[in-house]
View 1 (cartoon, rainbow, N blue to C red):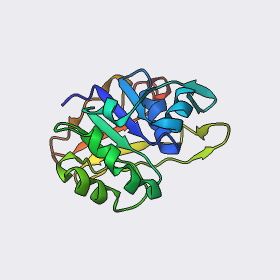
View 2: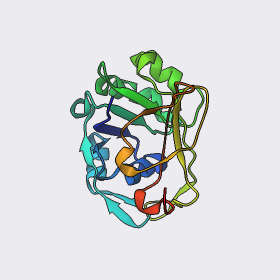
View 3: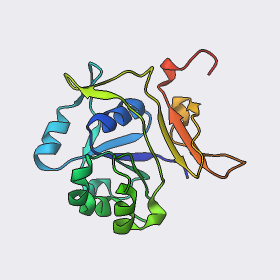
View 4: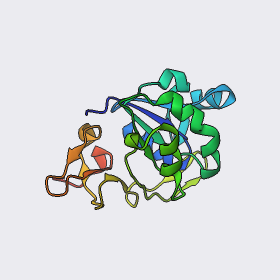
Length: 183
């Protein structure tokens, strides 16, 4: 399945990294309603640059190809109704949250078949927006029992590449302009 639309639920430290990495690469939106939507519409300051992803309600995001959940753990239970509204039969859900049972909680609400087990390692801080060092931050998402870092060209972010030997799916990214020469 080719990923063409991505919604991010939680535009904090981890969500900002996702917005930074996928900006202008796919149809990308952040989920917000009410006051949160108004704040998000003013933009997200990430590493001293302002980003303006689309802001979608859960209803407007219904049926996206990929939902990335990057909330604080304590906000998950209140967000389950929004997650249920966003997800349809083909939606893949990645939880990049702290907490070892977030995928289990989400899976109980929407069905485990939608989940792609995943993780992210990011050192960021909230200081005049969100800040992280792209040189020391690698995001790795995976399906299967093996984690493998694979730096991919930005144009390939949205295509899952099966690993022939394990059958797992691995994706890791950095922005193209920051890839080492020849990568």
